[in-house]
Image 1 (cartoon, rainbow, N blue to C red):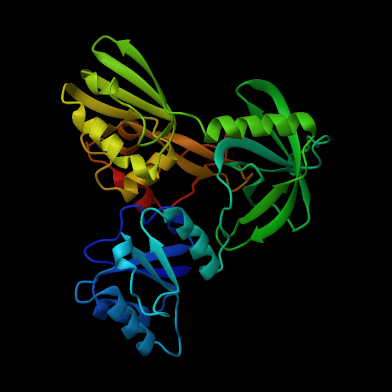
Image 2: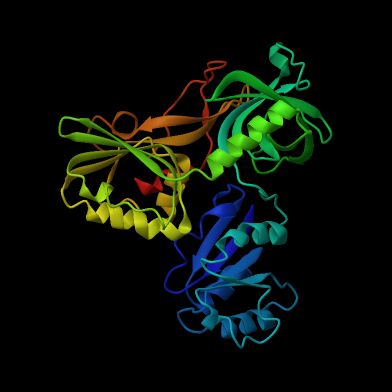
Length: 386
C-alpha cells in the first residue's frame, strides 16, 4: 500500500481523487498545516502533494522545513498550484514536480506512477467487453480451462486483465469481442508484457499488448476507437405523459450548447448509460444545466456509469438538485474471473424495510458459473455519493 499525503488549505482540488488515486493500493491522507504534515510524514509516507498555501505558511516555507527535517529520508514533493503566479520565483530544489491545476491534471497520474513505482495507463480505456482465452486469434479452445476472464478495460494498444489463472510474461492469449455495428465476433491475439500480483491480490493483473492484427480486425478496432473516443455529445428525448426521458451519450465538453435542454419542464429522467464522461473543463456546464431547470418538478439520474459515480464522489456538488435512481458498479467473479459491471437500483437494492439506506453492495450471481460475485472497489468510498 502506497501512501500519499496531500497538504492543502482549505481543501484539495475537487478532482484530485481521480486518476491513480482511486486505486486500492494507494491511499490519500489530507492535512492542512505544517505541524500536521510533519507529524503525518513521520508516521510513514511515499509522496507529498502540496498546495500553494497551508493554514500557517506558504508552500515554499513548508517544503524548506520538510527538506531540513527529513534529510536522511527525503520523499518526493509535488507542488499543485492553481495559476502561474504561484510558480514564479521559486528557489530551485524545493519541489520535485510543479503542476499547474487543472491545466496539467492529466499528467499527474503518469508522474505519480513513475515516482511510486506502480503501473499506469498510457492510453485511454474504453468500455468494450472482451473475453480472453488461451489460444490464438484464429484458434480458441472451447474447454472451460481455456477461459482466462472477461474485462471492459481495453485500449487501442492492448488491455488489462484481472484473472485468477496462472499467467506469465510472454504468454500468448486470444481475445474475442463484438461491436454493435458488427454482430460477427472479432478475434485478436495478445502477448502478456507485465504481471501485477499486488494491486488485486490474490488475483493477478496482466497487461496484454495486441499483436499486429489482420487488416479487417485492425480497421474495425480503429474505427471503434475513433468513433467512441471522439464521439460528440448528443441527446434523445422521449415523452411519457408528464415524464420526459432524456438519453445522453458522448462526452460533455464546455463548448456544447445545452440551451434546448434548459427549457424542459415537469419530471425529467436523465438516462446516462451511454454518457461517456464530463470533461474537467465542463463540470460547470453540467451544474449550470441542472440549476437552470427551474421548471422541473423532479430531476432523476438513471443508469449512471462508473465514471460518473467516481466524478460524483470527487465533486461534492455534482449531484445537487438531482436524485440518483440507479448506477453501475464494478464486480468480479473470483471463481472464473468474469469482470462485469452490475446495475444497482437504489430503492430496490440499498433501502431497508425501515426506509433507511445501507451503503452495502448487493449480491449478484455470475452469469457464467453462478458464483456470487465480489464487489470490486471499496464500498465506503464508492457509495460515498449517496
